[in-house]
Figure: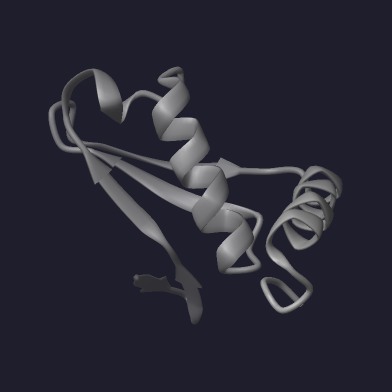
Amino acid sequence: LVKKNNEIFIAEVKTGDSASIKNISTRRQLLEYSVINNSNRVILVDISNQSISIINFFKWALKKICIYWKIKLGSNFYK
């Protein structure tokens, strides 16, 4: 967790190819963090390139994913 301007973000630190948002496993992981933490933004830190990216997910997409997971995993998974 990181905090900037009173906003708390989930930050994922990666190196090499996995530090790219083009990496499917990284996108999936960031999306999961976003859904679990009820936030449409997460931070991706690329140590190799010394860069920080804020990744935004569309709220409507997150809502659809949450509904799917709620059905698959039970109603107490996400509120």
